[in-house]
Image 1 (cartoon, rainbow, N blue to C red):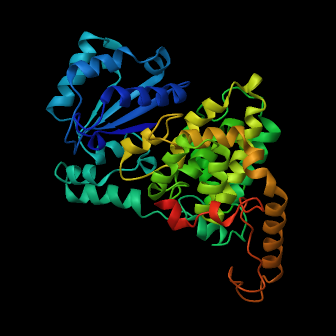
Image 2 (cartoon, rainbow, N blue to C red):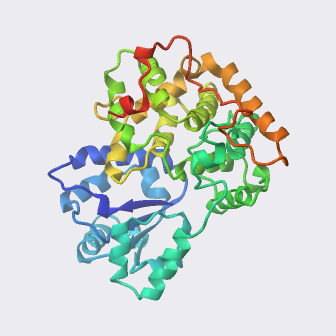
Image 3 (tube, rainbow, N blue to C red):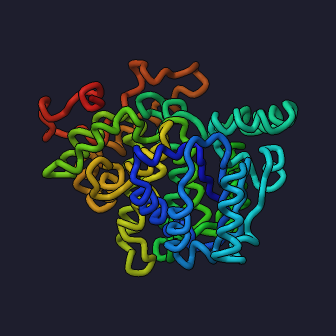
Length: 404
């Protein structure tokens, strides 16, 4: 299930909608290899695409995108989007019209799709408040905002400690191990979507402190989808919007590997560096089997880059995920980390594993003797996976420098 928010559409005079369409189609092509549903939030929008642009967009949809669309839920359909979509359905494709589901408010949406998976922007919530009874609105708000997860939707500093001494979350290690042992040669890793219910069941198991049975739930594609979900639901994305100016500089750098090692990674927290090490180690292994799994570095970049970003500007986030485009950067960084994992992370693999293992062991020996503070003298600080002797002081800026 995917969501599109019209309230985030910029003014046509400010953004080239044709280029925006290119990015959206690239994203849809990557994830439409199996059946999917799309939730279109029409309410709260200030701008809508023109009739001619909409027809052009529909004509460019690939066969997979059209065929595998199970349902299009249009939430808060005002006169213009309703007229636009109905007319397009009658003129262009009656089959498309049969997939349209009109949803007047969020309370109604609750009965149609698993709304706990959806992020509803404030503009949509305000618009919804005008459309349905306060009690229904409050019920939807409570359901989607008050649930507290224990493994998912949790800050890295809480899960791993400020210095990373608690180690990587078990869900990352379990998913990576299962994928490596059971499915490196499986076609469409991280691209083919499993049953949503299976992924949610695995998530619930981890939040309850249990170990899910990936084989029973559907196999390697469930592990892949769960790993992506964990990263996507982080309260703070791996690369925050404050670092976008720094990230954009990678396209101008003569050595993208050196830029990532010396400029980007030192500006990230140690927990972030640790989970990036685990993730790209896995993705590097996936690419090594691309002849059979068909997942090249570019394919992995397309499906993984959106999980690295989450700002208040969804259009900006999408643009940052492009590969090799001036003004972007995230896509290039992800692709480079996949292809050049050893050059970026390999120099400190031994140090990283030893320090992380030692910190966890020391914490375990103090279990039952009082809380062990991650900043205490008895707990060694986990080493940064990018700290290396080759980094001179001048080439290793502080977090503040990198954010400028």
